[in-house]
Image (cartoon, rainbow, N blue to C red):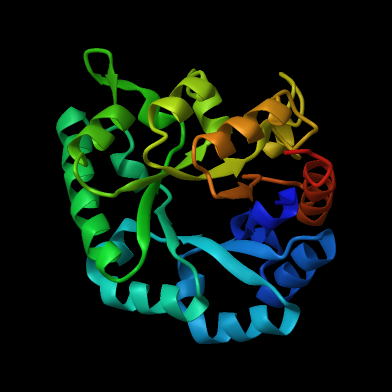
Amino acid sequence: MPITDTLSIQLYTLRSMNDLDTILDTVFAAGFRNVEGIGSHLDDAANVKAKLNARGLQFSSSHVSLAALRERPDKVIAACRLLGFEQLFMPAVPPEKRDMDAQGWRALGRELGSLAKRFADGGIRLGYHNHNWELKPKDGAKTALELLFAEAEGSNLAWQADVAWLVRGGAAPEEWLHRYRDRLISAHVKDIAPAGTKLDEDGWADVGAGVLDWHALWQTCRDCGASWMVVEHDKPSDPARCARASFAWLSKLQG
C-alpha cells in the first residue's frame, strides 16, 4: 500500500487560516487526500461533507471534546456516519483537569471505556489521544495514561498515539507503542525541532525537518496497528509550508 493511502492531516494544524475553504484547498494542493477533523466540523457535518466532496477529500477520523461525548453522543455518531469515517478521538481533557490525581484519571478511564462501548454500537471506534501530561506518575510509578487504560480494561477504547508528545513526556515511544498495540489504531506524525530552534513554533518542526527518526517510527506505528498516520503541527508559522513540506517528505518514505 502506498504511504499516501494511509496519510492524513489534522486540520487543527491550519486553524490560523480561519476559513475552511482555504484550509481544504491548501491541504489538497499539498497532496493530501485525507483529513482529520475537529469537533466544530462534526457540528456542521452536512456543509463540511459538501466541501470535502467538491475537492475529492475524505475524513479519516476526527477529534471531539469530552463534553460533546457526554452531552450529545447520538448527534456525534450521526455526524461521523454522514462524514463517512469510523475513528473518533478525545484529544485532551480540559486544561483545569490535566494535573488531576490518580482517582481522576481512573474515573476518566472508566467513563471512556463505557463511552467506547456505546460508540461501538453505532459503528464508531472511540479512542484517546495523548499529550505529555499523561506521562506524569500519579500512583507510585504508574502514569496517568497507564491508569486510564487500566480502568478501561475490557472495553474497546482505542489509542491515537501522539509520538512527539510521548517524547516530550520523557517516554521511549517504541516501548509504549508495543505495550499498547492492542489499542493503537492511529498515530500523530509530528516532529520536534532541534533544541533552541523554532521557538516561535513552540519547538515543533515540519515532519522530516526535526530530530525524530520518522523512517523508523513510521514502520513501528504501522506494525503496531496504526491504520491512519496523521500529520500535525501544533503551531506552524506558515501552515501551507508545513503541509507541503511534511507531505513531500513523508511521500518519499518506503514501507
